[in-house]
Length: 372
Image (tube, rainbow, N blue to C red):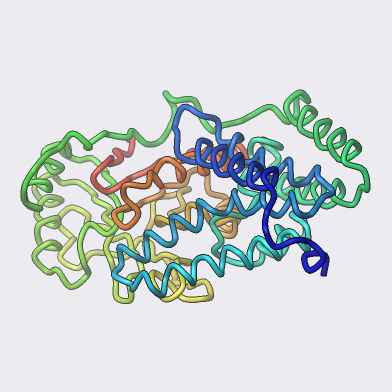
């Protein structure tokens, strides 16, 4: 009801908060050299404010980039902009209003129950409570709720600042971004410089990088599950090289899978992973799909594309006892928006939070060689 008592036209100051939020969030999300934490300064300001109108515009600015990514992705899929643009704007407005009304803490708690929501504020936990694992997620949630329960902006600011400083200074909370480089399980090979007119030319360049007896992971949606020729090609590469290949394949209904081609036994490739969550009605359903994994390297968990933004999937992967996570992705639908940069920034948060070895196989950008 508080909104009904305020003028509908935003003031210059409110628009300034919105613009500041959009700029800081965009820099933190998409510029590799900029710390990811910069994107969450608008939410920190919103937590410290007691004026809900200011909170609304700060939250709206932060969520605007999620709306942009979603809208552009739907456009690339061929949906009518006359329908998608209003739908995205309505979703942005409702998300902003709900988070402003309930508070960022309570909203984050409710969003944690949703398998896929790419803008949960708890994605920043690794920077606040590094090395704390699941307890860090719970601690950050309680801190936000506790700070928002305070009545005075100064008290909120002081408490939040004290928590952030403590999280960086206490020895038990020092960042742990996974194993040292020389002990990491995967070697990332940059293939972005590979240029070829045809798909077969691109694949031939990738095949040339694969060494005899190696284990290699390619990106997501390398080919469609109905493409028998593609399956035969990679089986032949695995046979000739006596290699094990893990390749992302688009299954029916757009759901991503990872197929394993192993040596001479690859005529019928194994299914190493099937994406548990995806974008509802586009690359997954409304509820997680817990399909049984048939084969996967020991101690490793898979994530597929937008699962890299799912708090649910990261927690679930960690609770399996995995020491490493491989994310296969294909960002064709969101180009030129650099969602790959955002995914890597988010994954570094969880590498620090859980002490995981995280690696990326991005279609057209990188492949992974598994160290023997």
